[in-house]
Image (tube, rainbow, N blue to C red; front, top):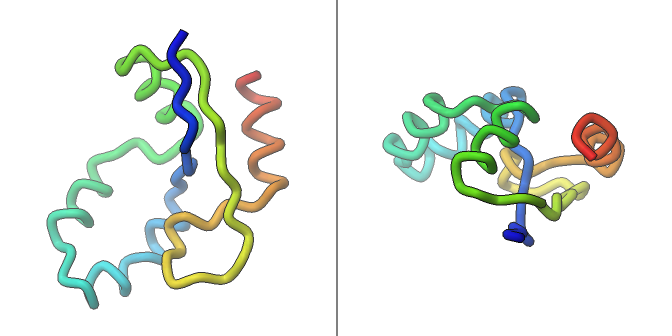
Length: 85
């Protein structure tokens, strides 16, 4: 069994909030890569299936930080676990 022990579920609204940071860091390639991703719970499950990952430990980041892309509240983690136990 493969377990990914460090997963931040990425969501479209967090990507939008992160665009100013990407531009400030001149991270154009990363921004283009993020635009190509399916940012959803279903997209995460599909990525895990392609990589042969059976389980994931989802990390919530609830404090205000300079990387809005990683912001995930505990309540969202609970929703994801209920959707994909």
